[in-house]
Image 1: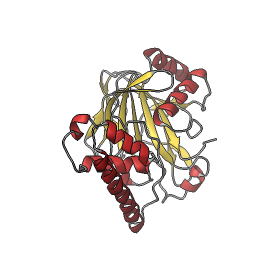
Image 2: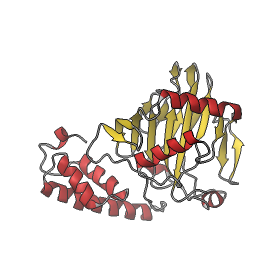
Image 3: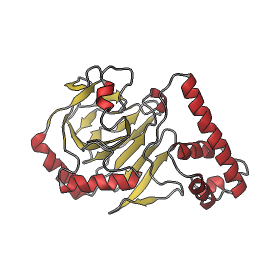
Image 4: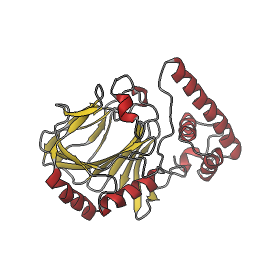
Length: 291
């Protein structure tokens, strides 16, 4: 949101109402949301009305979800973007806010990793790379899948000082406990490699899901960090949104999903690498401590 957007209107705009509802859904305190609207130029009367309507919008959404048989919504990680900052402090470095989408919540961060950190993470991962696997929701296991034509590996959480530093940075940036996260996964895409559109949550309808979420609960957020810049292709795409993020070295894209259902509009994929290669690191965030 920008001050220019809110300087003139005396009634809450649809954009403001959506933003307020998303903040309340994420667990933000109403007083903090009101303060953010005030700092962005909204009058208190308008802000209070937006809070009232935003709360009603959230309750209506929950009722509609229940009526439609959707899974219940849960709190999700959320960067502090209430005052529309151009940069955020992530505990040990300043990170730029390059793009922010409210519904669904998608944020592109610049300068999330230094080039040295990117190179070091690639070097540490290379000796352990193998053909990437995907989760098999029917059994709760993993298998090689033709939809994912990359090589990959997992670090244990805080396995190395670099991993721990990155995980602390993510936790500070999106306001989510470090322990509520899986270890970093590093992926390598050669020319032609891709990851077809998919969701990151675990499908509740599949028989293997209860065993997967028994530890840590559902996935509720994803951070994709670009460790190099491919010559051509390899962007992160959101087909339902008509959105594609260029894979720029050191940048990261964050998105969250408050229920394990396609209604979150977080279908995404890794576009084919057309020239060169692509290295990324992915961090998945869970509802509860993941041990």
